Length: 100
Length: 87
Image (cartoon, rainbow over all chains, first blue to last red; front, side, top):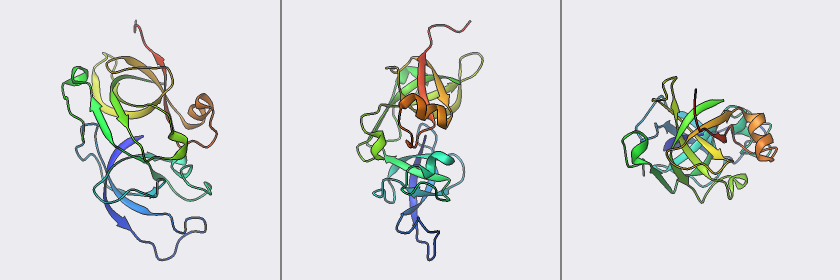
């Protein structure tokens, strides 16, 4: 799993059977210190509770679809959880604070 | 598997139901000289690893779910060993 910041919501008009009602979030992937790293993508929200500006962790590929029920759906990125707190060990590689 | 160093712990109360009670570790990937590559992965802990320890991470979905014993858990990365030494 990896860190991401929710930067927006995506509202589909027509969607594949099984994905009705699943929130779609526009997510900016982050490095472990909270800096943007890579291009944004759309995640299905497996928590159904994440919103804009929240720090989340997401999973890609087949595991992403497993956040949903039914899980045999065309999803390749999904939010697995919302981050409450992240403390990085200052001795590991020099930076004490997580993305917070 | 991936050689990595545990950089910290992530706490989360709102998550997929299969994540309940699991410890999530933010792990910095290491190169052949055991220096951080800049890459990282958030893995479910299965061995009781803590910050600063060098660990092995299984980074494959079916194996991870087999280790954790939950068939539909949305997880690909699991900490499966604490490394004493790399020869």
